[in-house]
Length: 181
Image 1 (spheres, rainbow, N blue to C red):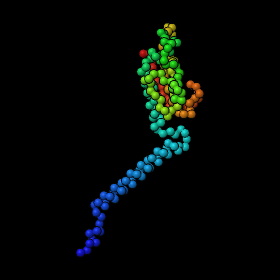
Image 2: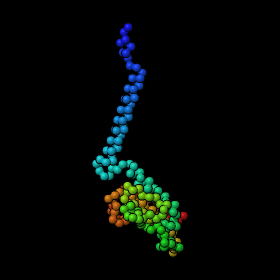
Image 3: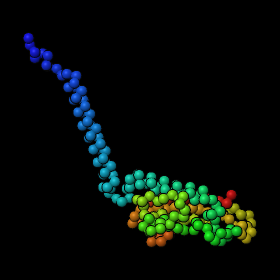
Image 4: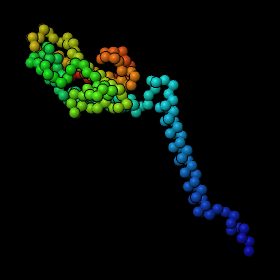
């Protein structure tokens, strides 16, 4: 009656427990490696210009949303009222404005305007008149309603220029054009 032959191999239960323990250790080490990799890319970058992709994505999403908001506002609200008649001196869209999250009133025009993500400090919104060279003759007075260029610049904390048009480093930028036709 030798009983040693019966206990020489592993049971199915022991094999399942061993596989389970190995998989737990493999999953835990994978999560640890991934989290260390992400930690290194966001906090220990050699230069301040190597920002994570998520920050760049947030900036671009904001720029695109703001451009779409202004294009949907329509040309009549963005036109140059000094040369295009009849003008509206109370237009809510100035040629230059700043959305500054450090201020008590950041500078939003309406409740429907996209909000600048809190990781950024400020955004400049510039609306300028495009030069058009397609005129055969000079347009009559009050009819010079030329296309408008919308430029949006997003700044990180510490990069904001002192005034619109300053020399701060722009983190993200977008442009679009809107015309009277």
